[in-house]
Length: 215
Image 1 (cartoon, rainbow, N blue to C red):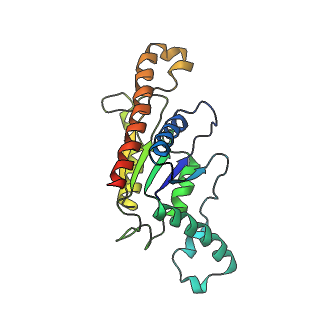
Image 2 (image 1 turned 180 degrees about the vertical axis):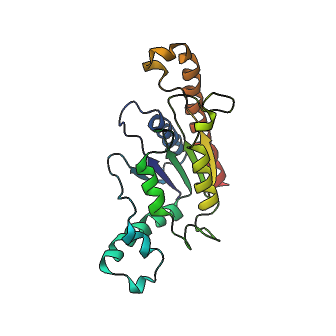
Image 3 (image 1 turned 180 degrees about the horizontal axis):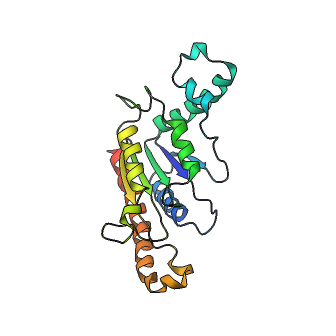
């Protein structure tokens, strides 16, 4: 039985571009693999604590020497690491907020990155496919005026692939503010094309991953 790890981080429970695409991915995944399991973290409704000195120090010390506070903090990190290691595929909703990822998603990353286990010379989840839904209100694609403000894909490629050794792929629904911003009205057709392609890509990627895992 395969396991999908789904991380949503949009602060909006309704009308979220990233959530609609991760939901499309999950739906296609479950249709192709109904006997599989899904681990879902909604970081907006159930945020994880940000990594503090207690949890960080626990990751660099012998568990036999941990204080009760370190034991409690590290237990959460171990649980998250085990979920990552158990997953056969991962999908992450990562909307762009103020040019970067939500702080709740950064908290999950900081907790799950454990040097010598999930990160380091031999990352424990190395090679696991991860699909990142990097939605954004405008466009930061190569050649656009705000290309240099793209800190979501660049960062997540570095931390997910370079740090955790995951096999990273991106789906990028863009111009999501066009329907609500009169100044972007002429961009609505481009937004709709991007939205539709994102949903199609999510379903296709989910199906392809299920087929790959079944082979």
